[in-house]
Image (tube, rainbow, N blue to C red; front, side, top):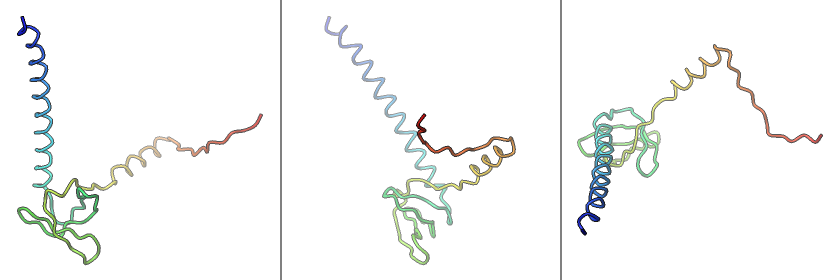
Length: 113
């Protein structure tokens, strides 16, 4: 009788652990793919929030230029993400202008009637 009550709990816990580990594996693979695709000249963010440009890459380390002429060495694991250009966003805004969409700035003001 106790097994009948305990079995659904085991199934729910097993499903939760399966989906949690699957999500973690996907995130880890995305991080590995990012680190393998890094190139010199890419702009990146580190896990500590530093914005830098890649000046050199080795197997486990990356040289980041944080200011003109200032290069520091970091572990590749410290690179959180690549900064992408916003050129696509600018193109989208240009497309809106061509279609006649108008952006109007309206301040929040109250009028007394």
